[in-house]
Length: 356
Image (cartoon, rainbow, N blue to C red; front, top):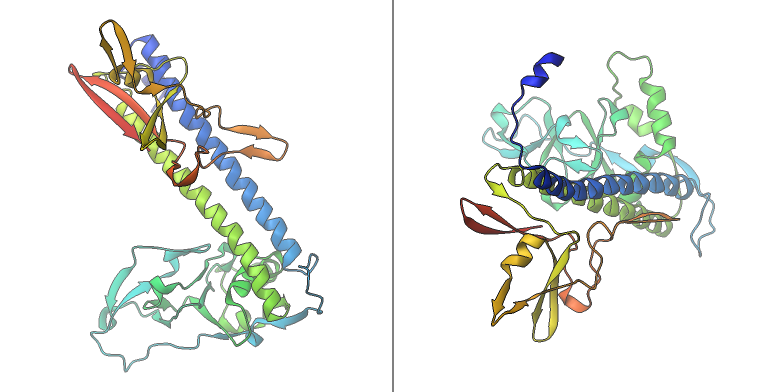
């Protein structure tokens, strides 16, 4: 597209006040998305710092004082312990984990199903719960993951080394070590200058890691796994916010849709037996829908929220950005902070939109 062609693009444009109102709503989501992205980056950086301290023994937990030893990975895990062979029944059906199905810590949910007779020739590695997949093709991309129960019936590509922890070795500790600076440096040295960056199972066997006793391995792994879970939760929140914004963009700019937003959000407070069930952010258009006039007196179930609005709830502190998960209600009647209630008019019909 040439620059002069941009002037020929036709878009739906509501009146200026409504444009501003739509922009205000979408900007709220943009701020939440940017804030979450910053939180993810900060959490990832914090985890890297934890790994550098915990996986090298620079920082120790109370109660542990034994010297660490440096081992070859082959001393701690079995490598490619089980494979399927030519004697496998031709109609044997299985889900196949290919190299493209694994990224750092994640296995594709929608794996292809094959029968042995027509399966890819690389489909040979048997896996079990607790095994670790180590991609030997482009290992610098860190295609490593732990096999959970959901994938214990799968067959993996021979492009992986399958690591099975030996007795008194914590699989989660080994897994975390694979992402460490120490292992990354060793892998980079093996693939440097290669047109096809790959290593083999013998190379994997000789990778070196520092390893404490089993209880300390478990303690370290638990802390780093918790950090991973926090990052995963933030990434899920980010995907959810982006999906919400996409839905809003499809609804709000519609030329037959009118939108009305007040100068600040209020809240619809849901209650049951005198207990709060939840607080929903409500636009002025929705407030009008919940308001009626009886003998000249306006009555509504909507009141000003005792809690912060979406924009106000995002705070900057000396420790970084604070992005709350909850509104702060008590007991089991808490609710997610980002619910939004809005009312639109389409062809003289009113529709109540409740978006999470």
